[in-house]
Length: 124
Ligand SMILES: [Zn+2]
Ligand SMILES: [Zn+2]
Image: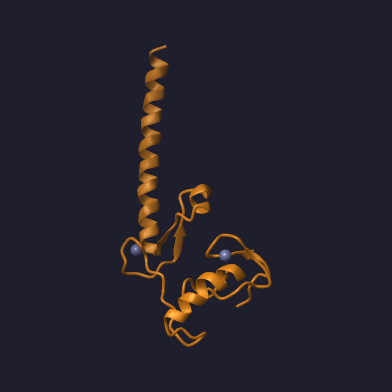
């Protein structure tokens, strides 16, 4: 596993440098965090528990919808929501379900819009 030298802090969305820090147990180690978050958030959290690097089981992020399967997808409505940290952790199954639902909605809307267009053209 190689980390990017600089990137986005997974805790405050700020920038991390020098490969960042391990944000466990707040986030999985693959996600990095900045020095400030490491000092103010990660370390106090570690001191609360018996977390030791590389020893403890990293709690898996579970799907927020079914709460049964491990989250595989971080879903975001749009970039604005993302900037505000509004995101949903979903498992693959729930994400597919969500896409199918949205797709159905889009298809229904398309049919509706086409019908309206025909109506509008006729009434001219
Ligand atoms: Zn940070
Ligand atoms: Zn799920």
